[in-house]
Image (cartoon, rainbow, N blue to C red):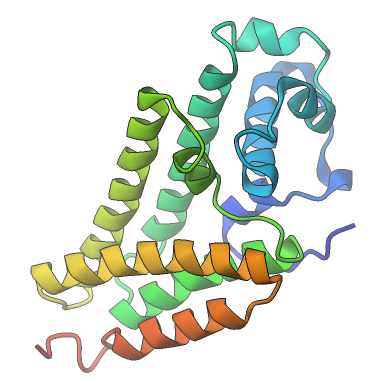
Length: 214
């Protein structure tokens, strides 16, 4: 059983939702299958996410997955990408009006919670698809999600007082660095690399008093 750390980020509850919290209700079978797919992508990657695993994890009736996703696995993965992307954007939207350093900290807090809750086993479902899929449609979808995250973070940085060009550069660095830090930490089964990267990015992110400093 995974240890649950209470945090206000809804995305993490999808990625590493404990077994006892999952109950099946026929009316939301499709949503539960999508949530299960996000979890499995984060834990096992694209190749390790099979329809049978999604059915087992979600508790959905066998055969229902073909009803909800008649076009196959890629259709389910598309839906999982959409959910993962939207939940992260929703978490970012709650940072409206925060200083840049708080935005950087919150984004790292999100991924730190994912690592801790999963005992350093889970990562990013979007990245899992990016590195393993041959489907141009899935790759385009993953690309659009990363761009959306970068764009929203840059907007938050600008709202916090940063210049546009600097905000875009730091937003791209934050997304790329956090994704890479998660991968390295999973490989090493340790938060050491993740914490080093987080500390470095926080050190270069302007705080409330220095947001306009070139």
